[in-house]
Image 1: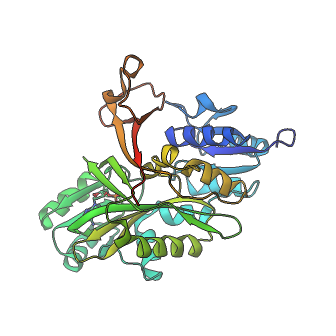
Image 2: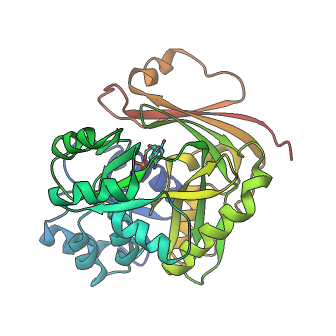
Length: 356
Ligand code: AMP
């Protein structure tokens, strides 16, 4: 620790780390970001930056010596990284939660053990598992790599055995899961937080729409939120408690046409579908995460406004230095260098008076 003042260490230097660092700054907490070389928007707004690989144990030890608590904005850090750091400083959320959320097979089994509904799924560890998995799940189905998938990367919808065999090769012959295709009515998510003392606070469920597997808009609250709120909150709390979780988590769900809620994925970090909280709540998901991991009490997740958040992808984020967003709309730009198509470069949040 530096001079007694609290320092939050953040693994990962992307936009989520940037918004965490800004929220920490608002609370008088300095941040130290750690990440490999590349575009590092979080480093630009942090007091310190260690540019190093996640496997560099010397750099990790030096980083740990300088911070009070370690968190992450990117869940695919190697398990060993979290282990090395947790021997030196509190790592929140803990390495156990990280390990579960990093592997879709382990994640789905964890949910199943809690009695939480998911899409039907089967392990597809190696080539000989293709036919049994297809027989168990049927078609259409979605095949997903167990590890390192995000924004639709590492997954494919398949309609028959031949397509599944092709996908298995194209996705790199790594361990995968096969999931039954859920003809969902809509996708919702809950951003929940759990404090060191076990208190839980969840933001209202929101409705998400995706384009090319990338989040495009979040409507907060989800229309007809009353229908899903009790069950969505119950499942979120159950997951957080079962993991003895500390921090913010994004829980993605499918609402089926017959009114069931299935959990699709848990993100052990602040979540894109919670960005609206920056403008529509007194305490944003980023502040909430900082509060939780620093051992502070949680803030209220109440919203003062309704919101629609739209991601700015690729070149949509360019030219804002010469243009005003529509009235009542808040612009966020992440300061990334390369505006490749589909890359999350910023977002807009349109506010309106709270209706309920
Ligand atoms: P994921 O990477 O698991 O979050 O999946 C990305 C997106 O693919 C989800 O937001 C859904 O739109 C779609 N998807 C994933 N799994 C399924 C499924 N089992 N059934 C239908 N759509 C799915």
